[in-house]
Amino acid sequence: MGFVSGLVVFLMIWWTALFTVLPWGNRPPEEDEAVEGQAMSAPIVPNLKKKFLITTVISAVLWCVVAYLVHIELIDFVGMSREMMNG
Image 1 (cartoon, helix red, strand yellow):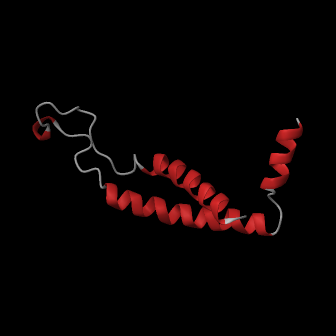
Image 2: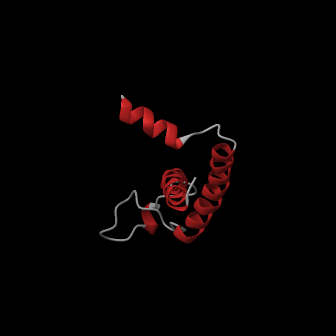
């Protein structure tokens, strides 16, 4: 797996993991905590930096697994693309 394909795989894993991690620990405001004009479903403290860090760690671990599987040729992106091109 080359640098560009490795980066693309990492970003795909990262975005997927982000949407998995985003709802963790969110708590909607109680009636007395609500801010006027704010959606009642908006979290009190979203902790985005913490969630980005968790997402990055999870993605790095999963990317290492995928890179290893590509290295031992259990996953073959080039072969998959050839099959798609040939129908």
